[in-house]
Length: 155
Ligand SMILES: CC(C)(COP(=O)(O)OP(=O)(O)OC[C@H]1O[C@@H](n2cnc3c(N)ncnc32)[C@H](O)[C@@H]1OP(=O)(O)O)[C@@H](O)C(=O)NCCC(=O)NCCS
Image 1: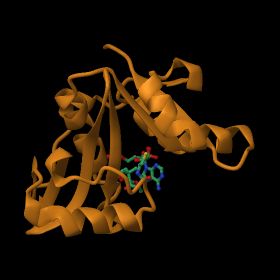
Image 2 (image 1 turned 120 degrees about the vertical axis):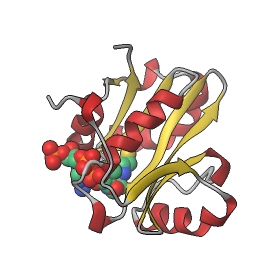
Image 3 (image 1 turned 180 degrees about the horizontal axis):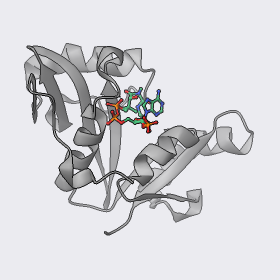
Image 4 (image 1 turned 180 degrees about the vertical axis):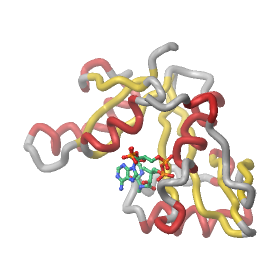
């Protein structure tokens, strides 16, 4: 396992809170990655800007007594350089409630495991997230989507 405390960004890149002017870049990233299009409010997002361009985004969605790490996207030309890991670790550090996510497939589940997320069953999700994820759960049960629900555990 890589030491995630040593994560850093390439020189040309900065992490910052999103502003209203970033909304179309955020929408474009989320849309092009075919991710959940709900709750795309710039106020909830963090972005990574490289050479004046938004190349990554991610957010914490708020639910009663829970948060969801979502909308994590790195533009394809910038993948594999640690941006996604940096942003994930930052979002985790911003979380103020028990943190959950849903992802598709074992490769992504392995990615999130590195940051202390563990797979959980649908029944272990808080009620607020069960109602959000009920269609994903149906798709999983019917073997249509390989969705994995995960919870951040301490440590
Ligand atoms: C997942 C994602 C955010 C990772 O960003 P990144 O900047 O490339 O990640 P890092 O460079 O920090 O780390 C690389 C790791 O990301 C994961 N990863 C990279 N590309 C991936 C892909 N297409 N699918 C799943 N995981 C991927 C791998 O675990 C990889 O580690 P490995 O090289 O040991 O296999 C990026 O691939 C992406 O935007 N994918 C499309 C959108 C998406 O699926 N988001 C997650 C929603 S739950």
